[in-house]
Length: 209
Image 1 (tube, rainbow, N blue to C red):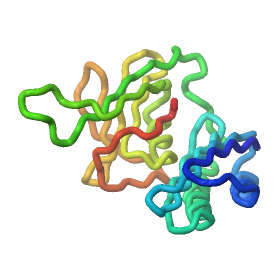
Image 2: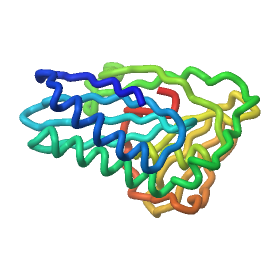
Image 3: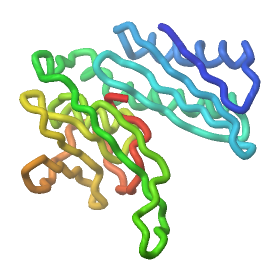
């Protein structure tokens, strides 16, 4: 497994590199058969140590992000979160056959984050903007990917079209599906998926990022 580690606002040490690699290798060897790649960002922000781990598990991405007052503890917590998700979906990850084998190309989507308190009489201030690829997948795959990434929503396209769809967590514990050219629908969660309270949050990561 290839592990790419980025250090921000802190010194890079071999001890931290080895700790990340050892922890991730144990998780991967236990739950995954496919060759994987991990992108890890370790950063120090306002005296808190942040560990953000993105793991490629076949067609899916798994994310664990934690913070604490100790970097080793943050790494352990992030790895534990990834292990819980992989354990939940172990059988489905191994037996999964992507629905988009002969699908169209991903669609590039742009999103913008606006300031919370816009100035009266002026257009909303764009705080940050970015682009990502909305990949083709089935609704079931999208729900699974959203949960593996610990996101509150996910933008994707259907395998047989380039229409942009969105799945998201609802406050009532169910999942919502927004379809281009259609109406909002409520979908049941597939077995093994968790549902939490919905919180409006920017898409820090998506299946195509």
